Length: 397
Image (cartoon, rainbow, N blue to C red; front, side, top):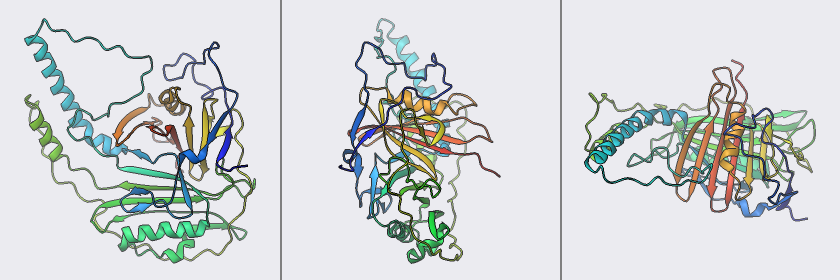
């Protein structure tokens, strides 16, 4: 059987406990419409291979395959930095529209007819001449080759990007753990300044699967999985953003514009990593992945696989799931519903990015200081509609 062709399990509900009348809950299918009993997906149509750029000089390593598109997001810190200038842009736009209406009272603007539950298409910061670029990029990878060699290449890429970390790719196993002589996973999370003096944080994980159940992560075709994330850490310089707003509009600012200083670099310098012993072990071989049947759990207890979606890849350390949603289905509402299941402190936050040929909408749960970190990114791309789910349990600090 071709490994690139899988039959995705089907489910009947989004998340247990969601109200049927919630506007964030997708409507149940119309019984008069054709429903599906199975959804076959050619996974090869949603794969990206080694050498594909991720961010900066980092690429998909040899021996690994990216599933779905890159997950590109703005961090909450970046969104918060741009909120004041966006609010001012909205204020000025409202004043200008009111003035135009007063000058031309006979002209009326027709109310556009929108379909029910329209998909987000406009960038959250579209009012600004240059919306902020996403500062966080994650690649979700299946490791088809030797996991140690793949992890070593990733360390080599990071060592070249941030040389002052003094990473030794040959000593990759220092970042790994083992149980009874078998690798149970590898991970690193480093921060420093690149050769171009840009602050970045790079994190990578290797999850071979469960030693207890002897199964690889769901959707991995029996192979380990990897997450590879890079985050820009330097705070944005908002001075030129405010200057551009003043140049683009005739409406004056309301009161004095705040004095903005040049932002400090984060981190200011790169600190070499301390030495650590290498770990001697062998990689486990799991012939099968954890099965996800109809309504099966995805990454977190409240998430279930739907009957209009196919699981492309998932992992447990960290918990994530990459999902392909059938065309014609409101994938945006599905993504919001997944996050709403954990958003105990209010409505999920939303941020839309118009990025190259894709549109990515990220929802984040509002959970309070002791809650989990939960997000879903819905990406509209040429190859399909995708949802990337991420779940991190509350810290034990």
